[in-house]
Image 1: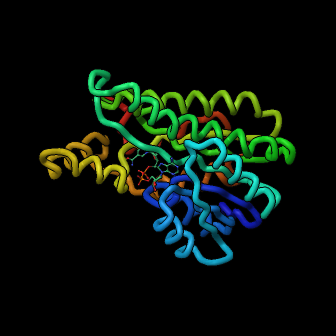
Image 2 (image 1 turned 90 degrees about the vertical axis):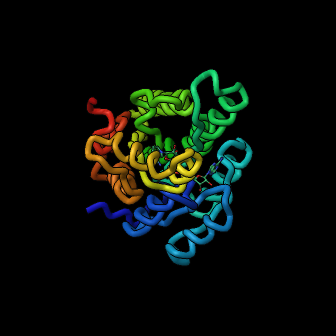
Length: 253
Ligand SMILES: NC(=O)c1ccc[n+]([C@@H]2O[C@H](COP(=O)([O-])OP(=O)(O)OC[C@H]3O[C@@H](n4cnc5c(N)ncnc54)[C@H](O)[C@@H]3O)[C@@H](O)[C@H]2O)c1
């Protein structure tokens, strides 16, 4: 089950957290994986840990349209196709609207939304030509329900859900599937960094764990498993979905 032999995948934000786990999980299912990230040292480490001939690091800032186009040119000239695109790179911001300025909002949109837009646009024509492709976007449970003090973050993640559904509808008849995942809190460097910024990090950790109905944060591997499912042909009838993987964060209080 979930055998990706012969498939070429690309994961953004793959130097850390959910993206790192996704790159390793897809490679373990025999996909060749382009490990894409801004962070060269960690990206190269992840590619090396996966192994030569199974993965390659590609430096990519998804907020730069030209870099997205260059990445697509490189991948398509080297491998002639891309089967699985995982738009996972994302950044956070804490604050209400009164604690968020236009520059914060623009910065989050550039990475979290426009990054997904530009990289998808760069790869989509080739996928349409082959009538095959699975695109998986990392949204968030903050793209399904509001999270307190996360105005800019939630705004961008709701946009990722909308972008996912629009893409899925427009290209369903061309053999393209587009889905997003909506994780609850996952223990990654992204979350650890946020926790360290609180006056009492231990209390903040306990409070964040408690926001899940099951009382704990998820692991990157638990999220990567859903990316593997959406990448595989076993999910052939799934498109336009926003898959909630949140330990019960959003079921009710
Ligand atoms: N951790 C969580 O609790 C959680 C929950 C829901 C959704 N998410 C989403 O999951 C995704 C991954 O989060 P994570 O927790 O693994 O974060 P992380 O900070 O551990 O990893 C994110 C990676 O993205 C890279 N990155 C940042 N900006 C980039 C850019 N412009 N271009 C290319 N790479 C860039 C970083 O260098 C880093 O390696 C994000 O989209 C985040 O919003 C995380």
